[in-house]
Length: 368
Ligand code: NAD
Ligand code: GLY
Image (spheres, rainbow, N blue to C red):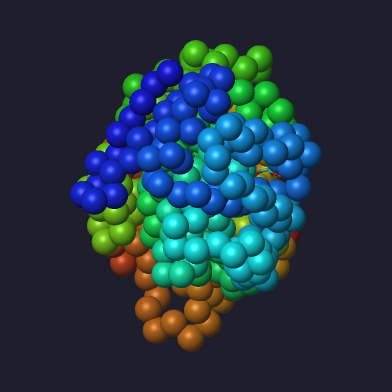
């Protein structure tokens, strides 16, 4: 098992990463919190695959455990589903000492975290992530949110968990497409901060699952994210580099309809586009661009976008039809392993580059 500490003053927490660790590790942080009621927030898929998984771990502890089961998928990451968590919490008489446990992928983690941030002005929560994407990214750092029909993750807050337990055995049941989506967020941390991590990842495949590789890769990935979050918890500056690939990624998810492309797939196409722009604007060398593009080409399937024009591109990127501002902070690469924030990047210039990108590389994004 590997352990990582996130050092945010007053909100420190531990992340344990390993195979078959949940039974041993989860009890202590729950008991230390002094709670007598845990509400597990999960979805129908996890509840079928791992029925009452968390309550079994806690059954000897004397802590009451109730389970709130939500419908599955990105399409349900919205205010309607979110309010069902509050209905449940009220029904089971949750109070300010109740602990939430998010048991699922990034969708469950983001919604349960947001519920923990807002129910009775804030209650504690623990992340037990079950997808590779949630292992390497969403369970760490405290961003929580739901989607609005016009913009991805536009309603949310920052709320750090009390503890994160990354149990690798859950990956055994994860569909391969979902594994690949998580792998893309893992690559993201290599692209933006650590060329050695990129090389390490390149040297291993996901099939069959190699838990030694995964434990180290997840540890290194969480460490990169953790150090950035420690510097800038609420994204007033450097944390924005974690959004590499997200400008186009979020546009793809919103425009194609939530759930059509997986978050990791959309970010993968977005990272390729951001690397392309970095190369075209003479920040990234041709050699690094070719390396990134060549590698992503082996992993990504094409994203198809219909009826996209400049006006819609701008609305989707700026999340606001009446926005005065016509520019975004765009994350670019200086080299493989080094990123920076290009402040006030013109949306029109990005649109021009996007047209070049789709014309030259329809295998990544095709406009129809
Ligand atoms: P997800 O939560 O939808 O999970 C993917 C699918 O796998 C779902 O159908 C789920 O039910 C299923 N599943 C989960 N664990 C499983 C398991 N062990 N075995 C079998 N099936 C399993 O998607 P995701 O990729 O985990 O997360 C994507 C979400 O995370 C997006 O909404 C994205 O915005 C968010 N996100 C948040 C952050 C953050 O910092 N908060 C970072 C990255 C992504
Ligand atoms: N996934 C981007 C962030 O956590 O800031």
